[in-house]
Image (tube, rainbow, N blue to C red; front, side, top):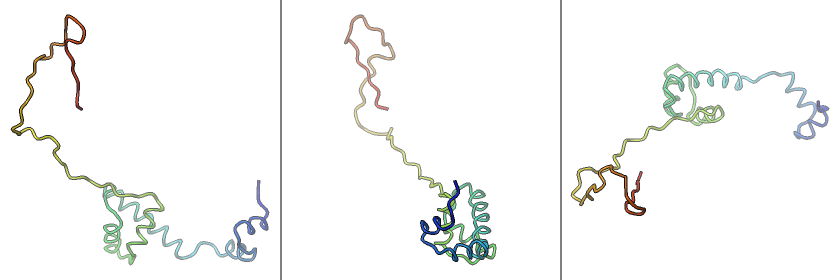
Length: 125
């Protein structure tokens, strides 16, 4: 279903003359530049294995000769769902070299029993 222009303008709260002017004028210089920069940002982001955020991409764009702010790069990245993957530092969670008492292994992988409730096992993982 197509909306009549009058109804669409009323819903969007714009004048009919403003709508027709927008329709005739075509894309703005800023929109065209954003399209060009978006393609570059996507390329840089892909080449960085999705690890670069807006500060690094801004630096890369400046080396290519583009004068652009970090918030603008961040806005474009956010609009295109480009989020840097963060690498976490490895943290060892097990301390094998401790002086705590270790429970003896009484079963030794022998789980066959002659009656119920003779042997209980569990797993902490």
